[in-house]
Length: 236
Image (cartoon, rainbow, N blue to C red; front, top):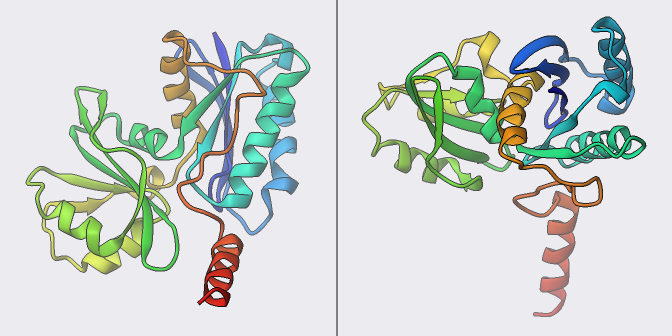
């Protein structure tokens, strides 16, 4: 079982290949270059370096959201394009769920957070026990106020993971002693965690066709929200 995994859900971008639950290769980049510039070259070079072609793959996985609207669209479009010619199954992975796998070696509550702007985060909570990941909440967009109130009810160790860690840490300002931030090398979403989760999903038959694979958004894009606001104002 060989799965190509893609993550372009935020500023960082990465691709990885898993072979029977083992990561055999990964490329990661976190620069100002756009994913449209870096993604396909990374995929091509990674497959070359691990001596595989697209025809050798069993599935293509992608963090389909939540995340940056442009980044998610690029990742999903790339996954669909790679899978289409050889009719490979696709695996739609929750970005937040994949981030919990960054902390797979630690028994804790993972608070996956992505910066959604305007004092909001995309968030979900997961419990890790003996390398088993249990989802505690759905993926959602919520305010930092609401997240803080929820975390105040948790007494176990909570680890912040994701590109929203810094803003969440700053907002909490040390108020919750049981909440810590993941180390820098485990903090950002990455395709190797996507690949590990995708392998589990593949074994359970949780795949879909290229036609079925779509971005998963938790709220409308900023431009659409502004348009809706203007239209509402014009009607009042």
